[in-house]
Length: 345
Ligand SMILES: [Zn+2]
Figure 1 (spheres, rainbow, N blue to C red):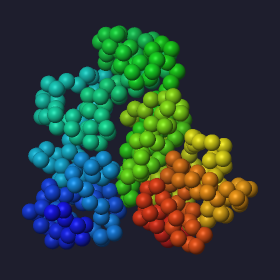
Figure 2 (cartoon, helix red, strand yellow; figure 1 turned 90 degrees about the horizontal axis):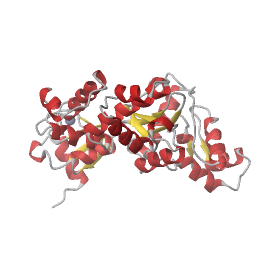
Figure 3 (cartoon, rainbow, N blue to C red; figure 1 turned 180 degrees about the horizontal axis):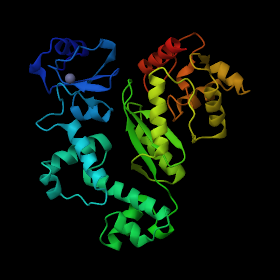
Figure 4 (spheres, rainbow, N blue to C red; figure 1 turned 45 degrees about the vertical axis):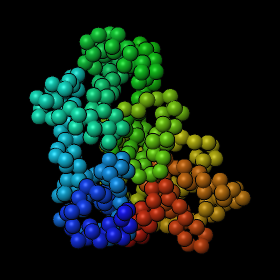
């Protein structure tokens, strides 16, 4: 029989190892997930999300706990992914073969599975995307196609052209589409994804946001630019300001943002930025502010389509009655953010 959430919580609180592997518990306040029997402190019930598989917990953006290693059957997923990423960055031109992985003591099929769970692509696809991102940078610096090809670690021009065209939609010599670079950040409310290029930030979202994949796809299609893993100096800026925000040391973001939406939506998002830290407004007040008091509904839906969570503070809009209203990242996060700002303002 299916266990209820209450029963699962009790099993978890009792550290009952007999249920290990039958379900997993994600802790929304830390972004970590565990299996039953974990020796860590039991989280509050309101911070618990239950998953039937480790994979769904990972896909929802939770990191495996370092104490109970919920992905451990028998390898270690967290450290494994880190090790693989470090390998790629230490030798970005290399075409990683199964033999190379075995040489580093890594089982290729485990690597494939864990990468798929975290990034939605296999390890070799990830490594290839990183090589292509380098090729793109090299072409941008004015290097010839042949140099870019060699920089990217492709031996044959045709292999390079095919891979390049598949990712960027054009041949290398006439490609103008710069890729967006996507990176994962850890926050006290769980992981966020950040999408930047060399000059701007385009998206910041909690990974648990509904339909995040659809939103990322739309961004890519709207701008006709592919999305590859990686970071830029703008990503560093975003990461450090978001960190300062969560530490209570930053009230106003100073970042080069680009919003993707209609003129009306952009007006709403600008009005959101104007709501001071630690304060709230109702949807009706926001509609009034942009000079269109009848558009309350359209304002609410624009609010929900904000793609720059935290930076554009859509969490500061609540119901007229004082109720929380909605939040794409989850209401627990919204109330945490409002409390956090109240405490620090
Ligand atoms: Zn644990």
